[in-house]
Length: 160
Ligand code: GDP
Ligand code: MG
Picture 1 (cartoon, rainbow, N blue to C red):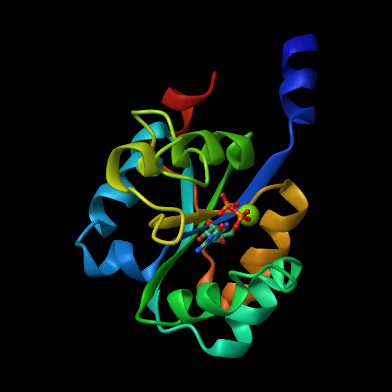
Picture 2 (cartoon, rainbow, N blue to C red; picture 1 turned 30 degrees about the vertical axis):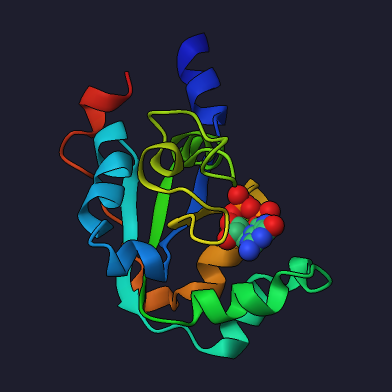
């Protein structure tokens, strides 16, 4: 009874993960999707997408005042991205760990940025930094009809 109650109180989170244009151009889409898929999170949305400037500006609005902001908008809109929505208990923080530090040279080996990138301005992947931003960014990048509610066959082998 008690373990079931505790489990039901655990919050299912959403996070927005994006393979940035450098990751797409470098042929890393499958590799990056695999890392989240193998971990055991649930994919609820996926698309190749050319991001319009307005959307890039909204997504990164908190960084407006940074000196690198114009370059960041150019980077994100420079080619198609792969947009993903992932769901699960603890998915936001866990995805950030899988991604690694913002600067790929500081990112631990074994993380996506640590293994696959060398510079902050080309760090191949984005991940939401809080459950609130996970919901906000998923809603920003996906229409409701683009998101699927489904039960993976392996669900009972991932969580007791
Ligand atoms: P993240 O959450 O780890 O992606 O990092 P931030 O939210 O701090 O920054 C968002 C994105 O802006 C980063 O992933 C980089 O692509 C870019 N960025 C951050 N800092 C710098 C910087 O100092 N120089 C450049 N060129 N880009 C940066
Ligand atoms: Mg961030």
